[in-house]
Image (tube, rainbow, N blue to C red):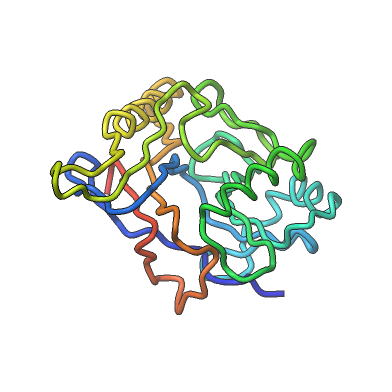
Length: 230
């Protein structure tokens, strides 16, 4: 069975301090340094971002076996795979999103379904990863909050342009830059050669997921990445 789409590829938004304000409502996630992978929960197969079998799938055999044995009601997991780019979290998958085998839905609905998915469906399977306090464990399916709310950092949500006030309502640049600095501090604490995080990814809440993309190189304007190195 082929993946439902190519994984959504964020637009390159450049350095965060040069980024233009975004219209609409967005949330922000850490950008982890790994290999993008679709995982079929029924077969345990892994595919890369080109929807080809992932060449290093054997390195994830323990966590894939655990996912397959769980008989999850979700068909596809959109993950980042930790292997080879740095020595941390070897054989672990970080859950980014999931495809429930239904038509695309807005991310506002996905947030609700994700909470149910993470705290009920994945109980005993996914390991909650407190990424600001501990490195990722090996051979696990990892989950984390999709904002920084659980870590004492303000939730950065962008709002629509208020022409009268001349600002974006609800914009929280302080929260975004706080998260940006916190992730850099985690990298520094882990060592000079460890790039566990690469930056931040902004995702528009009313964007649909998953989408049928024309190619693995097509960029999706509803997601935007900001990295500290390009």
